[in-house]
Image 1: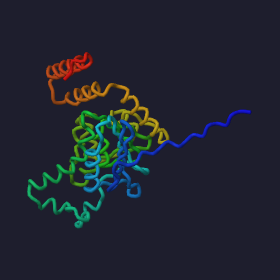
Image 2: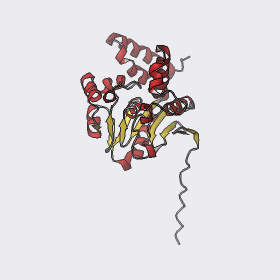
Image 3: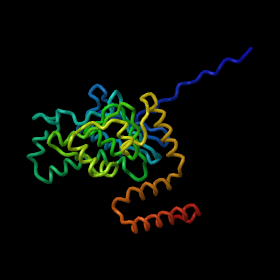
Amino acid sequence: MTSPEPVQEPAAVPEPVRDKDGVRLTVEDAVATVTLTNPAKRNVQSPALWRALTEAGRSLPGSVRVVVLRAEGTSFSAGLDRRAFTPEGFDGEPSFGDLARSSDEELDAAIAGYQDAFLWPRRSDLVSIAAVQGHAIGAGFQLALSCDLRILTTDAQFAMRETSLGLVPDLTGTHPLVGLVGYARALEICATGRFVQAAEAERTGLANLVVPAEELDAAVRDLAAALLAAPRDALIETKALLQGVATRSFEAQRAAERAAQARRLRDLAGLGD
């Protein structure tokens, strides 16, 4: 008689560290997953969601090395909730009209607070991956741009619609956009508000990889595993070096490379601080 096949237990689903205002954070070993959880409204964004994203970033345990930013449903994020454009705005939040009537200092502080949600994925001690399906429009596009790397499904579409609405992209997306595709293409994308399809995104550097929808989870897992294979300190130093290129001269970058390598050599020799 043959022995019965062992029963495969389903993989345990990690308990959320926090799950509030359309954002869920889960952590499994060195990988954290931040998920937008309002698929019925295509994960539209609001000040409450931005605060929840900021808190998710602050809640990451020190053991986390890779963060995956993803969304439930058919769209990554359809951008800003249109209630922001109404006189009433959101319950308990200042409307655009209220913001416009505030002082320069208050208005600047409000926008800076919104931007906080888009800053932490750039931390040098993390590598962040945006897993994008369907639409990523406006604030959704900028959220994907806040990550270090982007994996798209074949149906993914980026668009920067702010200029078409009389606004500007103000959620930290302009710097990475120009860095990835250059000034002329970035201006054309923002000024026209057109859709950038997945194939163009991959060709122009907006996407690191494009896969069929059914392969998105596996592609994200494979990339996360590859990132975790590198020693943490070496990856942190490498990310910091690359992030600084835009603001350093060639000679300053050479010096930064020497300093980083000296730290690595001393650390590997057991001579680090």
